[in-house]
Image (tube, rainbow over all chains, first blue to last red; front, side, top):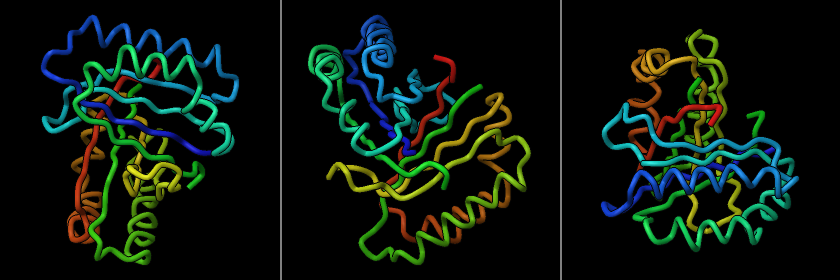
Amino acid sequence: MLRHVVLLTWTDAATGEQVAEIARRLRELPAAIPEIRSYHCGDDLGTNPANADFVVTADFDSVDDYVVYRDHPQHRKVIDELISPILASRLGAQFPLGG
Amino acid sequence: MLRHVVLLTWTDAATGEQVAEIARRLRELPAAIPEIRSYHCGDDLGTNPANADFVVTADFDSVDDYVVYRDHPQHRKVIDELISPILASRLGAQFPLGG
């Protein structure tokens, strides 16, 4: 089992409506991609000032299953049409769960 | 319930032994901090070239419980003594689970 984590920061031009639509569309992915074992995303709570703006965490049984998600057309469509236009920075990682 | 996520990148001088010791010491925190509901950390698997080097994810019932962990002396000791000396960059966020 592995966990995929992404931290996103939005441009100043990003609106709350745009971000809410991204969350809504991302949350449709588990129904379309059976390789996803667990999926969560949401806005940073604002507890720490230097935080990123948005988080995705997703668990998979294998790297191959993660790659299915990463490259899935419905996921790429959300990235290309909704995320990329308001993206200031992105940092991700995948690590083994159980550690 | 909320999830805390941190992505760390190490300096070129960081050794595998130093990082393994950080993971070992972080994994002792759930036994010392009962506010932690779930705790995982580990090295990035190297699947994507632009990834961070190390991940921590931790779940808490509330922001207050997360702050107990964030500011706990045993946690700060790992940060000050082991993480900070080899830290190139850090990005974190906390978001509501169930979303």
